[in-house]
Image (cartoon, rainbow, N blue to C red; front, top):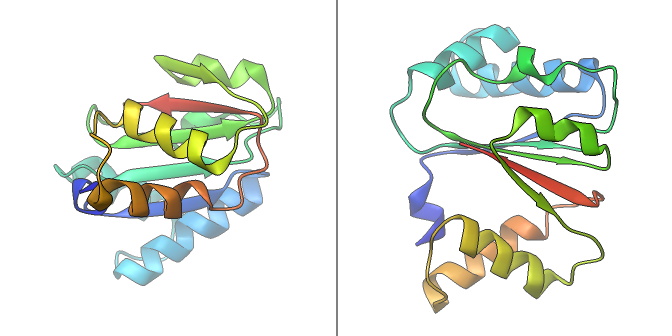
Length: 141
Protein backbone atom coordinates (compact mmCIF):
# COMPACT_ATOMS: atom_id res chain seq x y z
CA UNK A 1 0.00 0.00 0.00
CA UNK A 2 1.37 3.42 -0.94
CA UNK A 3 0.48 5.12 2.35
CA UNK A 4 2.21 2.42 4.39
CA UNK A 5 5.25 2.49 2.10
CA UNK A 6 6.19 5.87 3.60
CA UNK A 7 6.50 6.33 7.34
CA UNK A 8 5.83 10.06 6.89
CA UNK A 9 4.91 12.34 3.98
CA UNK A 10 5.86 16.03 4.22
CA UNK A 11 4.82 18.81 1.83
CA UNK A 12 7.11 21.86 1.66
CA UNK A 13 6.41 24.99 -0.36
CA UNK A 14 9.75 25.51 -2.15
CA UNK A 15 8.75 28.78 -3.80
CA UNK A 16 11.23 30.80 -1.72
CA UNK A 17 13.88 30.26 0.93
CA UNK A 18 11.46 31.72 3.47
CA UNK A 19 8.62 29.33 2.61
CA UNK A 20 10.93 26.33 2.75
CA UNK A 21 12.29 27.36 6.16
CA UNK A 22 8.79 28.08 7.49
CA UNK A 23 7.45 24.68 6.40
CA UNK A 24 10.48 22.78 7.71
CA UNK A 25 10.12 24.63 11.03
CA UNK A 26 6.44 23.63 11.15
CA UNK A 27 7.45 19.99 10.71
CA UNK A 28 9.97 20.31 13.57
CA UNK A 29 7.34 21.85 15.82
CA UNK A 30 4.67 19.30 14.90
CA UNK A 31 7.04 16.40 15.53
CA UNK A 32 8.39 17.91 18.76
CA UNK A 33 11.91 18.06 17.34
CA UNK A 34 12.69 21.68 18.12
CA UNK A 35 12.03 24.99 16.41
CA UNK A 36 14.34 25.13 13.40
CA UNK A 37 14.50 23.76 9.89
CA UNK A 38 17.82 22.13 10.85
CA UNK A 39 15.97 20.07 13.48
CA UNK A 40 13.76 18.63 10.75
CA UNK A 41 16.63 17.94 8.35
CA UNK A 42 18.70 16.29 11.10
CA UNK A 43 15.73 14.18 12.14
CA UNK A 44 15.06 13.03 8.56
CA UNK A 45 18.75 12.20 8.15
CA UNK A 46 18.58 10.00 11.24
CA UNK A 47 15.40 8.16 10.27
CA UNK A 48 15.97 4.75 8.74
CA UNK A 49 12.45 4.62 7.38
CA UNK A 50 11.07 5.35 3.94
CA UNK A 51 9.80 8.91 4.37
CA UNK A 52 8.77 11.21 1.50
CA UNK A 53 9.68 14.91 1.36
CA UNK A 54 7.88 16.83 -1.39
CA UNK A 55 9.54 20.14 -2.33
CA UNK A 56 6.86 21.83 -4.42
CA UNK A 57 7.26 24.74 -6.85
CA UNK A 58 11.06 24.96 -6.72
CA UNK A 59 11.12 27.38 -9.65
CA UNK A 60 13.60 30.02 -8.40
CA UNK A 61 16.92 29.46 -10.24
CA UNK A 62 18.84 31.35 -7.54
CA UNK A 63 17.64 29.09 -4.72
CA UNK A 64 20.11 26.39 -3.66
CA UNK A 65 17.98 23.42 -2.66
CA UNK A 66 20.97 21.41 -1.38
CA UNK A 67 20.67 23.31 1.90
CA UNK A 68 17.20 21.82 2.38
CA UNK A 69 17.89 18.23 1.39
CA UNK A 70 18.68 15.89 4.29
CA UNK A 71 22.25 14.55 4.35
CA UNK A 72 21.58 10.84 3.97
CA UNK A 73 21.24 8.13 1.37
CA UNK A 74 17.80 6.98 2.50
CA UNK A 75 14.37 8.54 2.30
CA UNK A 76 12.64 9.88 -0.78
CA UNK A 77 12.52 13.39 -2.15
CA UNK A 78 10.25 14.63 -4.90
CA UNK A 79 11.04 18.08 -6.30
CA UNK A 80 8.53 19.76 -8.60
CA UNK A 81 9.59 22.69 -10.72
CA UNK A 82 9.13 24.60 -13.94
CA UNK A 83 12.89 25.23 -13.86
CA UNK A 84 14.67 22.50 -15.82
CA UNK A 85 17.92 23.27 -13.99
CA UNK A 86 16.60 21.67 -10.83
CA UNK A 87 17.46 18.30 -12.38
CA UNK A 88 20.98 18.81 -10.96
CA UNK A 89 19.53 17.71 -7.60
CA UNK A 90 18.14 14.43 -8.87
CA UNK A 91 19.59 11.16 -10.09
CA UNK A 92 16.18 10.43 -11.65
CA UNK A 93 14.54 13.03 -13.85
CA UNK A 94 11.07 12.87 -15.32
CA UNK A 95 9.70 15.55 -17.65
CA UNK A 96 5.92 15.92 -17.50
CA UNK A 97 3.40 18.47 -18.70
CA UNK A 98 -0.37 18.81 -18.77
CA UNK A 99 -0.93 15.45 -17.11
CA UNK A 100 -4.36 14.24 -16.17
CA UNK A 101 -4.65 13.08 -12.54
CA UNK A 102 -4.80 9.42 -13.63
CA UNK A 103 -1.59 9.84 -15.66
CA UNK A 104 0.15 11.46 -12.69
CA UNK A 105 -1.05 8.62 -10.45
CA UNK A 106 0.29 6.03 -12.88
CA UNK A 107 3.65 7.80 -13.07
CA UNK A 108 3.90 7.95 -9.28
CA UNK A 109 3.09 4.24 -8.93
CA UNK A 110 5.61 3.34 -11.62
CA UNK A 111 8.45 5.28 -9.96
CA UNK A 112 7.46 3.99 -6.51
CA UNK A 113 7.68 0.45 -7.95
CA UNK A 114 4.11 -0.34 -6.89
CA UNK A 115 1.46 -2.38 -8.69
CA UNK A 116 -1.87 -0.87 -9.64
CA UNK A 117 -4.45 -2.03 -7.12
CA UNK A 118 -7.31 -0.60 -5.11
CA UNK A 119 -4.92 -0.29 -2.14
CA UNK A 120 -2.33 1.76 -4.06
CA UNK A 121 -4.39 3.79 -6.52
CA UNK A 122 -6.52 5.71 -3.99
CA UNK A 123 -3.59 6.95 -1.84
CA UNK A 124 -1.56 7.73 -4.98
CA UNK A 125 -4.44 9.81 -6.32
CA UNK A 126 -4.53 11.73 -3.02
CA UNK A 127 -0.82 12.57 -3.38
CA UNK A 128 -1.07 13.68 -7.01
CA UNK A 129 -4.06 15.90 -6.27
CA UNK A 130 -1.92 18.05 -3.97
CA UNK A 131 -1.94 21.44 -5.75
CA UNK A 132 1.17 21.01 -7.85
CA UNK A 133 1.26 23.67 -10.52
CA UNK A 134 4.54 22.41 -11.91
CA UNK A 135 5.34 21.23 -15.38
CA UNK A 136 8.07 18.78 -14.42
CA UNK A 137 8.89 16.54 -11.53
CA UNK A 138 12.16 15.51 -10.04
CA UNK A 139 12.62 12.37 -8.02
CA UNK A 140 15.53 11.82 -5.73
CA UNK A 141 16.36 8.79 -3.70
